[in-house]
Amino acid sequence: MPFLADSDRKRLARDIVLNAVEWRRSENHSGSGFLGMLAAENHSGSGFADCQGTASVNTLNYRAVDDAIIAELRTIVGDSRVLVDGDVVEPYSHDEVVGLRGRPEAVVRAASAEQVSSILKLAQRARIPVTPRGAGYGLSGGAVPVVGGIVLSLEKMNRILEIDKANLMVTVEPGVITGDIHRAVEAEGLFYPPDPASLDSCTIGGNVAEGAGGPRAVKYGVTKDYVCGLEAVLPSGEIIQAGGKLVKNVTGYNLIQLLVGSEGTLAIVTKIILRLIPLPKVQVDVLVPFGKFQDAADTVSDIIAHRILPTAIEFMERDSILAVERLLRRDVPFHDAEAHLLIQLDGNTQEAVDADYEVVSELCLAHGAEDGLVARDRPMRERLWEARRKIIESLRHESPISHMEDVVVPRAGIAVLLGGIKAIAHQHAVRIVSFGHAGDGNVHVNVLKDDLSFDRWAEVVPLVQVEIYRLALSLGGTLTGEHGIGATRRRYLSMALDEAQITLQRGIRDVFDPNRILNPGKIFP
Ligand SMILES: Cc1cc2nc3c(=O)[nH]c(=O)nc-3n(C[C@H](O)[C@H](O)[C@H](O)COP(=O)(O)OP(=O)(O)OC[C@H]3O[C@@H](n4cnc5c(N)ncnc54)[C@H](O)[C@@H]3O)c2cc1C
Image: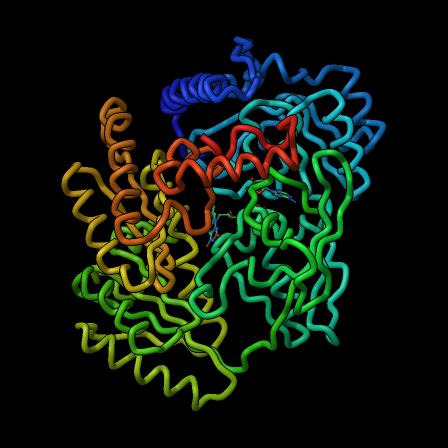
């Protein structure tokens, strides 16, 4: 965490040690058979002793990764693809969640489905936890090895295997960076719409496992809407092929959709077949400033109510824009506005896009927008989107300690949600900056520590978190739209799902993974 001072890291580390202990206790209470014991090793000198209570967690049911296991892993993938040294494995101890860390006992970089299979068979036999990992750009701790064990990185399985123009499908390995898929298919006049803001860093395997979304979800949907086939390795080591280059397929249960969004707890994805669509010929982006926060929020609901489906409607409030300016050291247009909407429209003819644009601009003006910046060429569009994509990084630069939520509500409820979040911030006297995919009801809510004391911070975050969840649930929404439950929201799962559903879902996991070697400590309370 480059933005954290050492003293802050140590303080955060204490919280995480407590979380780990709590996790172990809750697993015991649920009668899962995990015996609670913290191996209180001192990892000082490992390079990350200050911050990973979870690092030393292991259970009596899980075997430690010893020299014999390391030797077997080396036989499977080769010496250079097994990492064990403290500094070398450190980057695999966290994702993008501030402060959450877990020390991998070994990191293995697999090169094929067969290697993944052999690793899982070994882990199964020896009862070693395995945490799959793409690029570690997740925002719910999914790739963090909270109970130690093996981190199985898919980063080296990064080939685009085929762009099938006859079937409009692309076949990829899981470690391909999502933005590389975009560029490759767009060069062929084709389009893969899901575009998480992290697209030039995250992997398609991580997107599949998280069910990732992105700004274009308003019109085009999310990752799950494009996955037609998967090759996956079950925790037993068995390799399955689900689906294929098929637009229709109702043969048996829909295992593909079960695996999409399963957060690496059911299987490890080793090949993905994605549906493509023709690349729209015309695209226009408009940045619209609003003098009042609520006017921008109301405009989003009104655009949807007028049956216009923009490609994207992103919402950014002033604090996020100013933070981006400070990070990029250049002006963002209309920086005095209380909120911005970044609206993208696309289509196959200029006339169709212009017609939508007319309606959207009229609605914006009717809600108090005074101006707008239209970008029709790629460099200008990229410039507008750069500001949007830099928000998370910029806010972390401002307040290295922060907490992010990802609630989602039915689209029409977005104005009430945004207004309610402001009220929660006011009530608790804490700075909350919201931005995100307002057009699909999904908002990223950033609670910033700024200069609050650690005691106040520890007290206020859970209060605010629960109130934000309650607000979203009261509007018919839920806890997370695209970042996942992972390690950070699992204790709140029962706010959104009733006992019957949680029991059913646990049961499904146990069918796939009765010994719970795959990504333990995620999703379930
Ligand atoms: C700046 C920023 C912006 C972001 N914007 C968005 C956004 O707009 N939309 C969005 O949805 N998300 C967004 N995210 C979150 C994140 O990028 C996504 O969750 C992404 O899908 C993570 O991919 P990854 O390769 O980094 O996965 P990781 O973080 O490595 O892993 C994520 C989860 O997937 C599992 N996993 C990874 N690979 C596999 C595999 N091959 N098989 C099985 N399980 C696997 C892991 O175990 C873990 O549970 C953003 C993150 C950042 C930091």
